[in-house]
Length: 379
Image (cartoon, rainbow, N blue to C red):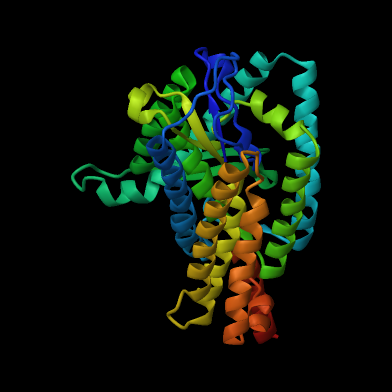
């Protein structure tokens, strides 16, 4: 989470310090070296309250959708499972990527890099927002309008050697979602408005929580522990993350203006929260919800305890940031809270062993297991 005053020109937009899991203090100087902006207490409270609320939305609804997603047999909706090996590698890959971007911005022109990134995230954002809107569109789509089915198919080769490259099925509802998402994307490309940025950011976060699945709690602990060290090192140990964040323009953060009450929708002094501070704890919270479901006790104890822990950790981040007036890595507070609270609950309920033994299988694994059992019965 961070705050920075935005310069008038779009090409020097406000720093996205928290897009890479960083938190900055209040009243940072503007990029054009003007005087510090001192936010009013009301403006600060509104900004941070809005950020916390926006952060909770993709975690809550993404976790609920992840339960359905884990049972889906549609290839387009199947989750990506993160194994313990993936979790152990992730901080290393993230560190290499971060340092690579740091060198890239040092060597090449920032303007052209951000132009390329804008086009890239435009395409991703349109798809992510369209996927996010699909359930809502299905509920409100007029029954009087025919919902026609379409299929986009690309193949390679011919005859028996023909191989499918792309096989995507969609309908009229999906096309409407795609058109609406494209309008938001064009708005973002042309204006870089903070509302358009937030729409894309929320879509990215919700899709991340829904579609990225940890296979067990141990994997979640490895991932969060590794990123805890990553976040603390790159924020407190070097200036690499700060340099990259100030140069990087992309909708991978949520922002809310502290001067909204004074300047309305044209406000430009933003408090920010990086998507990494939402998605990383969010996929762990979603895993605990699926564990709750597996217990068949009509209880969501672990989900609610981790969800409340996230609120506590995010609130503590803001408190420490304003107390010490210094940049804070949010995962420093979120990881112990989101892992510690559910573990304590499991200890009190005597279900700690059961929680760590829980193993989530993908739909492909379940299908393969079913085929294997069928073969055994035939034999």
